[in-house]
Image 1: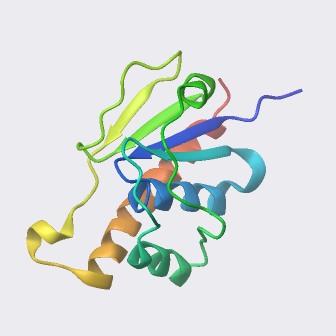
Image 2: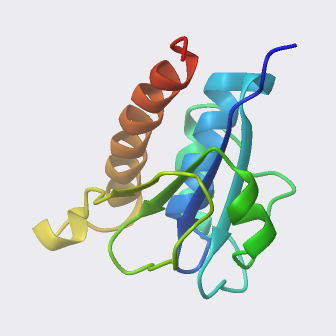
Length: 138
């Protein structure tokens, strides 16, 4: 029996970037990867601009909500990805931790839906690359 790889995406609020990465991985990988997301200080709701940007390309956060980072989950996944430099997590079990310094269009004066599309496209490129890596024979 082959192992289904698992990945946990983490950001501060678990309302935007980590939810976006998780939705994109679910869209691209289907059930070939177990996908989780969490926040170091979860917010109250998923960012509506993130949701809209995902829906434009057929990805969904339906049924999702901001969740706290859970130690047991952190210790159980194969990979941990921290999106952005604001979220900091303590040591993990055996899972390697990657930090993705994602594009931040607001630093260039780009806001609203255009900002969210640029962030989505940056994260999608990274998730696609990660999926290719997960599919490589170990």
